[in-house]
Length: 317
Image (cartoon, rainbow, N blue to C red; front, top):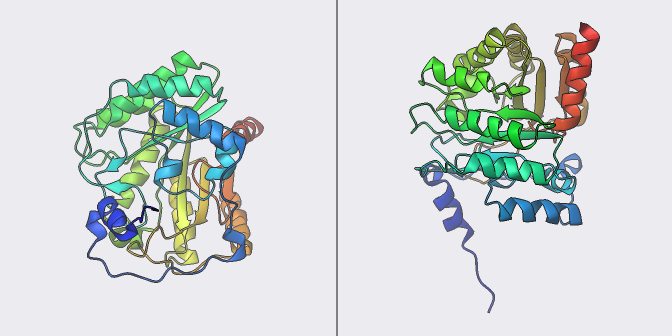
């Protein structure tokens, strides 16, 4: 007899903080947002390596629409420090709750997987760990160091939490591990933070990106923004200006997609031509690299984009 999956119970267990929220309609996706289901041999090979090494990926946890494309070419974004987040952002599909203890073997396991997949560029992200004194900073730094030791030819990009209310030394520890790219997403405009990203603070996140450049100007900085949540064009342009004031090199802009009916509703689907306009505006503001499209995500095409970053910096020198 076929097993019946109680999807409501599964969702409530994953997002207990959203259980009492009213459900909002899930809008049908327009043609430009439809992607092919994963299933290629490359996807299967990447999935096998991820599972055998006991790794968590944001590709799966965040239900990324690009997983089929990325995994088919052995590109997976590793998510360290567990799969349970201490935050409850209204847009995010990562499970919320009380996380377990850190696994001290994880940095080495991640590094082994990077070497096995022969990655040229690797992206490491994490859940928020507000329960830890340093927010997981030492674990992040240890992971970068392990990758450098096991796969010295690989370039390393990190997508970090905000380390809100953690010592400045925590952030400095991560910066001093010298990733090639330090990414922290602002996600949305300041006006929407209380409803979309209530556990974070816009200007703290902006200051984090600025600190990276102050401490090590050679590290590329990157930040991302979702659209379709009710922001205005003027607000998006202001975020661009704020990023540039903080020295951010690379901006990503993508369409927000609602994980479940309990998550923040989609205000609208932004058509591809509007993304082209936003890309033109961002380039005019001085970003070295801009990635703006409905399916753009922080780590989508990260390796190719890193090469573009290096080339753009060299051309501007």
